[in-house]
Amino acid sequence: MTGPDSARDTTPDTAPGPMPGPTAPAIEDLLRELAPQVLAALARRNSQFDAAEDAVQEALLTASQQWPDSGIPDNPRGWLITVAQRRLTDLLRADVARQRRESAAAALLPPDAWQIAPPDTNDAAPREDDSLTLLFLCCHPALSPASQLALTLRAVGGLTTAQIAAAFLVPEATMAQRISRAKATITGAGGRFEMPPDADLPDRLQVVLHVLYLMFNEGYTASSGDDLLRPELAAEAIRLTRDVHRRLPDETELAGLLALMLLTDARRPARTDGHGNLVPLADQDRSRWDRSAIAEGVEIITTTLPRGRIGPYQVQAAIAAVHDEASRAEDTDWREIIELYRLLERVAPNPMVTLNHAVAVAMVDGPGAGLAMLRELEEDERMAKHHRLEAVRAHLLEMAGDAAAARAAYRLAAQRTTSLPERRYLEARASRLA
Image (cartoon, rainbow, N blue to C red; front, side, top):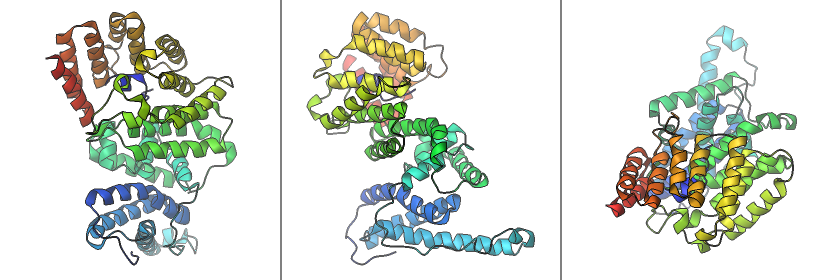
């Protein structure tokens, strides 16, 4: 698990009347928001996920080229659907024409295989389950977990291939190939744009929860780039998790994940200052936290924990609740957090859990005890060169009064992170100790 818990927070075509003068960033943000909705609409109408995704990308490119001069249409979603549908119709008709020239292949096609539903430019609001259906399609069992996540971030989260590649620490060309193969695999496996039968949902649930979890994490703490947060991505993860929860209200781990997201996202208003710089948990203005989200998250986890088998999302939500219920940083019940991390290590052992556990131990038994736990992680190849290990080490060394060692660790962590806000924060901590 690499969740948004204490180690992150303690360390570091056309319509009349276009709107005039849109800026490029505003258009980019709007297109990122609309892309999953447009893809869901096309995939639902045509059941051609791979071709639909290509058509949507061309529509987005057309919009990014035209809208800065022509203005944003009154119904940008309908505009994009119309342009993408026309492109998809062209693609499918061209494909059918090619296949008809190949008699053997053409004979396999049903007579109406290429008929396209007419576009609806007034389709301004997405159907409730479109994005949810798209999520389950991206989590098709024929795909590997890594491909499921990459495709979900691309299709549902609206991230660019370059952003996903940066998050996975692979070249953009490699990620483009992975996403292309994933789309082809879904098509080859007969994947259709429809929700699986209710009886099949629990079998896919674990994968769906993991993808939603990682999608939220990427929104709450971007793994790379100039911004610490991608709020729209975190918000979409929460919305989708709510949708799944409404369908499967008795799944306790699903409820735990929703609670975890709410309790974590509640701190988002205080996680950055006016310049976008990271503010660690201990220094946050807790009056800026979203108390309604905290109340909802606490209620969910309080109701869920006594029922059924305890899973890692529930435990992480309980940890987040302890942090959120402390009115001041010094009021945090670190002993309870330690016990919860011990439980989490039994339920879902993971080096990131150990890293967070070490922070909690240091808060109770002193930085030396926390540093001793970090030494166990140095042999773990998943963590040995991870910037968070050095960031936590630096934090504990600073607590111990070893300014020189802390400064070196902060600088090493800053070199390893691909997030500009995190790098600025870590470099600032190092400079303060110089």
